[in-house]
Figure (cartoon, rainbow, N blue to C red):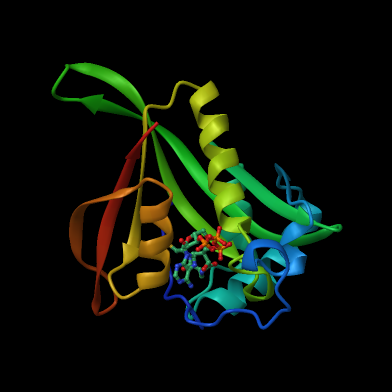
Length: 184
Ligand SMILES: CC(C)(COP(=O)(O)OP(=O)(O)OC[C@H]1O[C@@H](n2cnc3c(N)ncnc32)[C@H](O)[C@@H]1OP(=O)(O)O)[C@@H](O)C(=O)NCCC(=O)NCCS
């Protein structure tokens, strides 16, 4: 199955209107976010977040196919028993042409946080947890594509230590993808 080009993010400029707590963060951001592996029972919640996040969302069968694919790591973020976000990363073997050896490389396929829980470090917690898990598997680098117009995601990835590493022309319908990469 081919990798579906990532959808266009919806409502990316919105910040939740919440009362502010310590250090200017919303009170709800003080609730602990737990990261665990995906279970089939999470599918309904994930579909809702996907539909609220992208204009051309993946279907539940897309999520199931990726979950069953070799090398795919699928994590969800949980707050107070609610699924509030998810991340899907595929681990592949690649040739490091500079040093002529095979390395393990991660490809971030999908990441979204429920709009109600954005700017509360859920995305950061999901990325950090998956990077820790990839490091244990000796993955050396991770890369992703993001719509050139999705400045929120681009800014988010820059704060997470990714850098721009190229562009895929017309990767999406009528739009280029920026390639972003981070060493582990
Ligand atoms: C991108 C996305 C996953 C970020 O998730 P999040 O939980 O809101 O991000 P975090 O709260 O962990 O943000 C971490 C840092 O990223 C940056 N950032 C995140 N959202 C931002 C925004 N709207 N504006 C400016 N900077 C932002 C900030 O530096 C933030 O730190 P701060 O809140 O302390 O300033 C979320 O906006 C989302 O689901 N977007 C729609 C789907 C999408 O575009 N996915 C990526 C496809 S490639």
